[in-house]
Length: 168
Figure 1 (cartoon, rainbow, N blue to C red):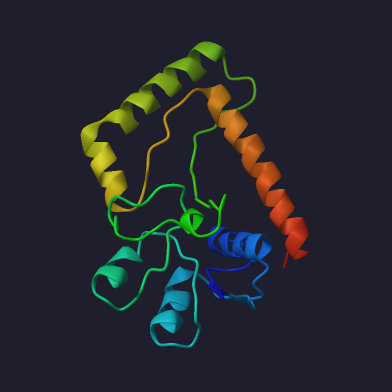
Figure 2: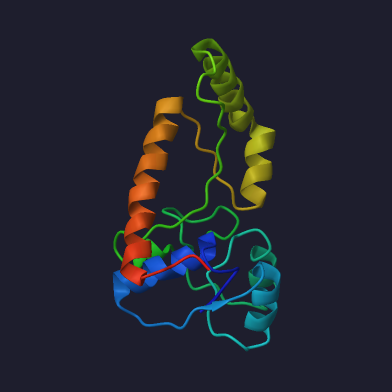
């Protein structure tokens, strides 16, 4: 099982799969997704949990066969590819990005930033650009983001403990 490196989101997606299925795969960490993708295409490794950007084109040209997407829903760019959750109930692994501010930032500034960011990701042009690279905007409140962080910390902590993973 190739990954973009130990502790990377693709590595953790593979570890989650191992934990949920009991399938034993040897982790082969690379220094980034590019080298891992090269070895996958050439047959040096058998599977790669990869981030969508940089992968979809290889799938569309037939260089790679997509088995599933790890997100909870199908990708707009690859609607024919099932989700891993269709096969392994409850499986979901996705990368997300958010905005943060210093702890003592005034509430009115946080609220204004939140309003503007939500408006930006609701823009049809921005939505289309994000979808083209496999992104799915998740507008919400600062409290929603705090819950996401807490939930993700708990989930991935379980994966780290189950896999006996250690910093390298």
